[in-house]
Image (cartoon, rainbow, N blue to C red; front, top):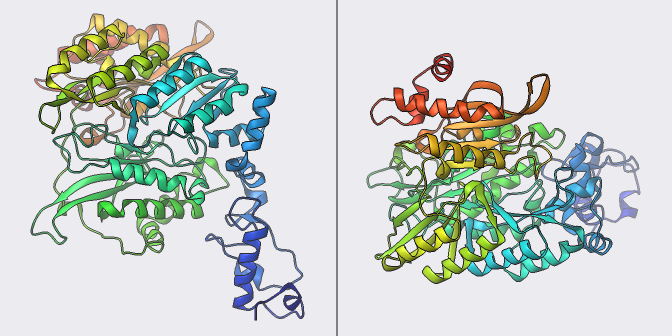
Length: 594
């Protein structure tokens, strides 16, 4: 017999197991407020707690959200509890009709739709997309150019997740923007706030002759799994996932919460020979931590299930009281990796495979700046062309032109990169020279000096309220100055980020600039703390600060001196990273100040 409210209240006996399960299901259905989670006393897995269920039936059950008492939630979690950010379409329509910007908790909720109200930097919306695997079609890019022209301010930015952002939309246009995105086969759902961010993949996957595996199908499969599973939008903070094909160009997998790194196991090992993924966990370069090998070796067809299981464990047990401790890193710090893997394994229908990294072939070194220039594909007679896009910014005219060139010289495909540029693949040998010429005419380029090819900059204070400096403007000025003054034999990456959130990942740059307000002649001006020696992949390491609080007008001279000193003092064949890592911070300060 099914328990009912009458039978539950007939006496003061403790609830039976059957009654507990009934109550858990009942409250999940009627008390969820659209969240899909029970908001009554529950354990971390979302079930009614023993303490609440075993007391007197008339005593009040304390409301919780993911097992956390409402009073203990941070404000963002309360915003989500009060109103599900995925259920605000009517509110978006109303704001568009009234041409009204969001206020209070709605500023946060709108980010779930990819809409960022970026005041006071701009009294406008920024739209962030989802571009799974960093692959986009020419027709889609053309449609985005139309959006930027018709509703924005005529430009877009390629991000450090190989994504696209379009800026300066007014509220009256947001419904048109979101509807057109869907018409283009794109989405912005879950592109911001506490969600799995854009799924990145090696930009050359599918045509790189050095890669171990085409990872695009897995990146796309995970994207659509996320979009079709509502619980994967209920995280305590953002979450980054990358797929590395083992090819020539980096996707910076070791900076992600989960990095799936293609690897090969040869004959005679403890596991069957073949191509697998090693799983890297808890990269967060803003906290100066790279993702570490978890000891897992998984088959490619297992990746979506493993990723979903890990994300669900994070959702259930991540910190919802303190935003500063709500990333995967802190859950692993609290639990340890093995407990985390055990909890993830409980959600899978197959066991997780452990294997030492020594079972696998060593990762192949990536080609620094392999994202710029002309390179042969594994398909005979075809090439990909890495297009230089300074600091990732494109005008709408350039977007239209890139779309046209991808169709005219390639197959209408483009790949975006975490280095804020793009690739045009599948260009036949006899079409290369024509494409080169037309790229230059479009104000772009197919080759680069060592400076602009490795220049990365976040949005900066012209479009982000957190940024302390005009990073994109300063990066452009630096490139013009340094390319005239310095000739380098080896690529150098210069990363400018406007605040400690480190969207431009200054800790992994050969030279990293962290924006700050600094004192100059008694005034607060835009300046930078300067770091050197950072790198990822085979050059993995966190940059060290060598100069603090340098006003920007002094930065070009200082960087010119640093690069000239490197040219003068470096050993034969020595890269900038290798040079700076040979010396102490004090020695570098002395060299660069002579």
